[in-house]
Length: 170
Image (cartoon, rainbow, N blue to C red):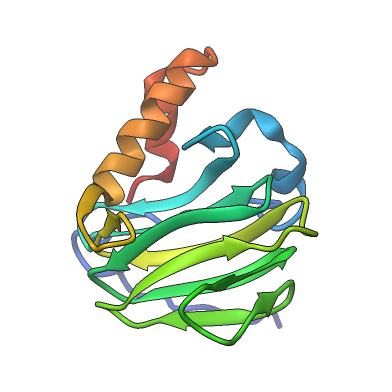
């Protein structure tokens, strides 16, 4: 006999699941959907959860150097898929296959070493980032809603239409 799953009703109001094939393989090679943040930094959305205030995305850096000084308002989980990076404020380095947990509140500076041509990390970030200069002055911010808006603009620009972003929102 075949195995049987749950036969009851799912909770009322539950949002539908989200399934993407090839996130760790095919997606890494498809340049079209990477949303530019600067000339060398881009992201590819996996999930935008507007109700819980978090996002999951692939972050790609294609040149060594400082990416940003920032502070998180919530916890961050990172899984490095390619390359390596570290924070200038710490003595550890995380590389492909590694995991990092970032506690809310800490201020740190993401750095990609000189000999790393490309870094890709899957980040799950809750809350917002405050981008800062080296003295701690806030110069910008980012959260699930600003990520959605940046993705909407990119998808419109490349001809997919701004509504393409809806496939990532839950």
